[in-house]
Length: 80
Image (tube, rainbow, N blue to C red; front, side, top):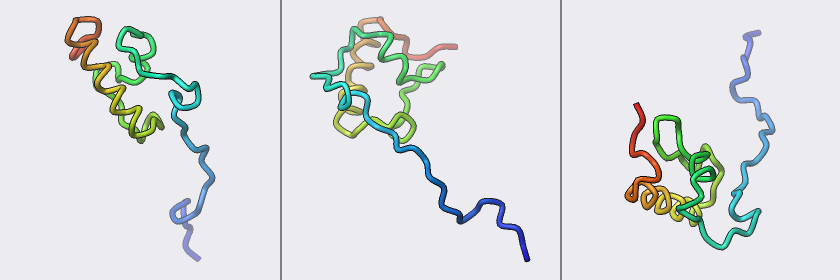
């Protein structure tokens, strides 16, 4: 009998949730740098919904907020 090595087995994984919906945040603020940095990689890329668990509408707001913060030089476009 061949070993399966975990492929095809259903494993329970905790469902990611939208932190903005849970906290009932009215809008994503571009001035909240500490909050925005948690949705970016250390290189400065915006993390995907799949990785953060953010809902679609808040992910769009988050992207706009990060872009605004970058444009007025609060956040870097890219870090070396």
